[in-house]
Length: 266
Image (cartoon, rainbow, N blue to C red):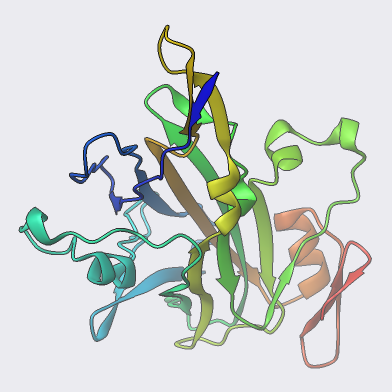
């Protein structure tokens, strides 16, 4: 039996599947990406926090405060691949394993000028034409989180976790230091698709002549990054955090969160 291993052609594009031309017989594979950034309704209406992405020389708001979601644009990826212009003939391949800069931050925009504790929920997933894809590991979508954030650890047993929790799709981050009115704090610094994605290969019958072909499982898949952000007051911090977020927090004399659910902040 003859086996043919076909080299993948990896293309990443904004929100759509893009397949570039290739030599005869080469596998045509593509990865696409999309993102959402949402703002959760606040219990205290005076508390507001924006999620902003660096686009060009300026930061742009990607959650508008009314519950609607806008999209992150991943400008560094678009620039590297030349997908940020109308000329599709010069598009370049996406490089798996390469770290692309991605600057996302949170900003305290409270109308009342209050300090606030900020929490973000980040969810990563893969999708295809049939909906959610569970073959590729969400952990292959590697986001570099800026310093100052604490990632919540779960004390649940495996049988208590949701399917999303078991799959490692979601993570919750708390900004340990209160965010003062008008101040910002970095959240995401870069994004990388791990090289392990290239090992997701399935061997199938290529035709009825005894030839088998290796198919790359990322072909036609889209990776998604969803971010939700909300905030609570710093007054009566422990009680406010427990009431709004349902977690037990320890706070030092400076108002800095030192632990949540028994897990110490690094």
